[in-house]
Amino acid sequence: MATTLSPVLSQHWDADRSWTMATYEANGGYAGLRKALAMAPADVVTAVKDSGLRGRGGAGFPTGLKWSFLPAPDGGPRYLVVNADESEPGTCKDIPLMMATPQVLVEGVAITSFAIGCHHAFIYIRGEVLHVYRRVMRAVEEAYEKGYLGKNILGSGYDLDVTVHAGAGAYICGEETALLDSLEGRRGQPRLKPPFPAVAGLYARPTVVNNVESIASVPSIITGGVDWFRSMGTERSTGFGLFSLSGHVERPGQYEAPLGITLRELLEMAGGVRKGHELKFWTPGGSSTPLFTAEHLDVPLDYESVGAAGSMLGTRALQIFDETTCVVRAITRWAEFYAHESCGKCTPCREGTYWMKQVLARIEHGQGTMEDLDTLLDLCSNILGRAFCALGDGATSTVTSGIALFRDEFEAHITGGGCPLDPAASALFDYTPRNRRADLQTLSGVRPGTVGA
Image 1 (cartoon, rainbow, N blue to C red):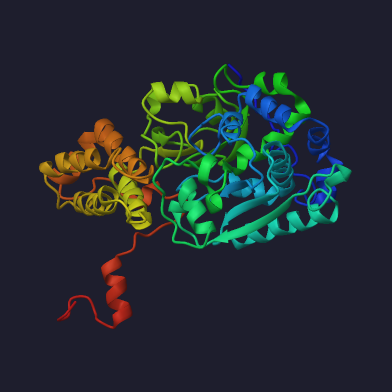
Image 2 (image 1 turned 90 degrees about the vertical axis):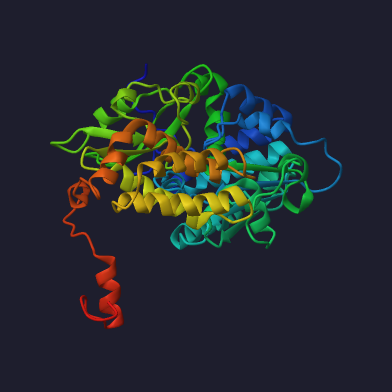
């Protein structure tokens, strides 16, 4: 088992002005594009397919295989859309990548577009992260200035235009078909599949939709070679990936390591759980994945092993929570997020996430009953697998796993009339819990305890 990091995407994040074209070229940037343009497009697709690269956006679908699903050229346009709408709680790898080295994404876009026969690619960025949008826009401008984008790229005869699009800020637009609807100017809602985007995607044309990290990994595969990429990771989960450690850990941040590394190994490199405390629970792939506990510290972080242990690798957003954290409170906050971000298209998700939020809030505030636990599980079973996209499924993951792993804590909220834990103890900084009702009364001019309070 690998115990060391493998900086590839993050290798030059600490370089002076790492986001500029000059720095990127000085460190071998665009060598992959030059090599790819000298290859047949089909050979580029084959190389990515043989590398075993799997989608880094969470689903883990083989990237090269996804490209090969495009139908034969018919004379019409085909598109590449990069999903940069990172917005799930705890997931924070694509935005640092685009801030530190946006050119690796642009180069990956150019190589991928050449491989699939695309002449107009789109990078869909969450509009709320304006600083990231501006940085990627400037990177694209620099690529045009240097001849890596535009007409007759590097004298190859290949043309490519890239549009950077700012989304309106909706979590649902991280789902590929909702993203396509948003990109076309419609409300972001998932489409019924089939047809899949590879057949009828953007503007009803064949489209490849890939995550930022997936596309950014392509240049290194072309320059380093298939065998080099497969030398990292596991047999079925090849290569490297960004692991985002956050929460109760001494040194939170991005750790780029081969797939198959364990949380125990990552924690050792990150200084462990904060001093004086012990691990209580964690998420292996963000807030939409079932919870793990200290019993899962040695589960290899690859798609197969995490799945066999009962969760999903997802976006490798490792949120670490120590024993001071109330699991009911954490799950309730996630449930509030999913209820807010549900697009409302599907009844099970729209209604189910709303009622799940209400029941969890009741339990958290000590007003629940034992029957509420069965109601929650029943709600989850009526949402799971019954919606157009995975938002509903993700909303149920922490609830069902949380009750399975920490049922006694849920029951303690019910029998004890409230949370047995001090929320201030879990904070990483000085924190005084706010009384929301008192705040509202102060803002409205009504003193607590008076008539109408």
